[in-house]
Amino acid sequence: MSTVTPYQHRDSPIIMIVMRDILLILLGIDMIAVVAVLLAGAVGMTRGADPRRQNRLMRWRVGLQAVAVALVVILIVTG
Image 1 (spheres, rainbow, N blue to C red):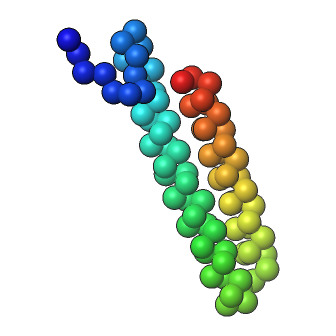
Image 2 (image 1 turned 90 degrees about the horizontal axis):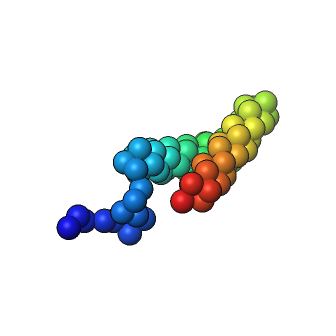
């Protein structure tokens, strides 16, 4: 008798389990990066930073959010 975590199936190959764990770790890192860029932009706006830098931070945030959405979709599809 083996121990099975809630998101695993007994018939799941180990590669799928490892891949899911890696995707979850990447999603967590990406979410932290989104929050960091968002906070950097908010702090910069309150201090009156260069508008070009603010625009660059906004583009980075949007790109990181797109990556997060893509990772969530991959996790749902492979789940």
